[in-house]
Amino acid sequence: MSHAASSSKLCNPAVVGLAGFGLTTLVLQLHNLGLVGLGPVVWLGLIFGGLAQMIAGLQEMKTGNNFGYCAFTSYGAFWIALCLMLLAGRFEVFPAGHADVGWFLVAWTLFTAILWVGALRIHGAMALTFTLLLAGFVLLDIGHFGPAVFNTIAAWVLIGCALSAWYMMARILLNEIYGRELLPAGRAWVGAARVTSAPVTPPAVATAPVGGRVAEGARA
Image (cartoon, rainbow, N blue to C red; front, side, top):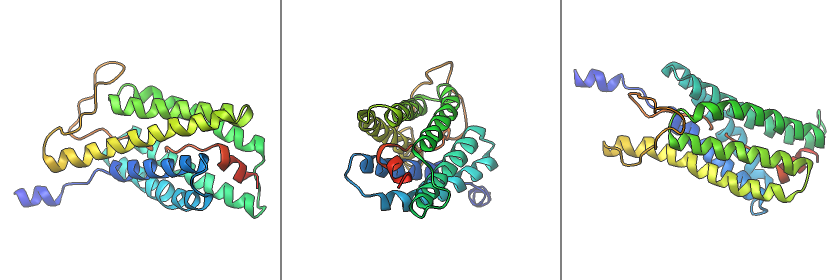
C-alpha cells in the first residue's frame, strides 16, 4: 500500500522553476553590474531560465495551480524571447531598437503587476519575491527611458528578488527532506494564507527581468 502511494507521488515542479528563475536573474544582474559578460546570460536564459522554467510551468498545469502555471510558463517564454531578441539584434534579423526594448519591458511590468496582486494573497515569501520583481521592472523602465543609474539600483533589487526565489525553492526541498517546517513561508500580506496540501508554488517567478546592459545588447 505504501509502495503504491510512494510510486504515485508527483514531484513539485516549482523547485525547477524557482531554481531557473533565481539563477538566471542573478547572473543577469551581475552582468548589469559589469561583473559578467553577456554570453552566460544568453545561454542560461535560453536553457535554464527559459526552457526549463517553461517546462516547469507546463507541469504545474497538472497540479491545478493556475498561478504557477501562468507565471512559470510566461516568464520562461520571457527569457526565450529576450535571448532570441538579443541574438537577432547581433545578426541583424528583426533587430529591436531602444524604444522597442523599452516598451517590451513596460509590457512585462504591467503583466507582473497582475501576478503581484495575486502573490500578496499566497504567503509572505511569495509576496516579497513579486514585490521585488515588480519594483525591479519599474526601475528598469525608468532606467531605460531616463537616468541610467536606475538600472544599477534595479540590479540590486533584482538580486534580492533572485535570492528570495531561491529561499522558496529551498523551503520546498528542505521542508520535505527534514519532514518539518524548517523554513517558514510567512503570512500572506493580504487576507488569510491559503491552506494547501503542499507548498504553494510561484513562477518565476522570471522572473526574470532585464535591463541596462542587456538592453544595450539588444540594440547591437
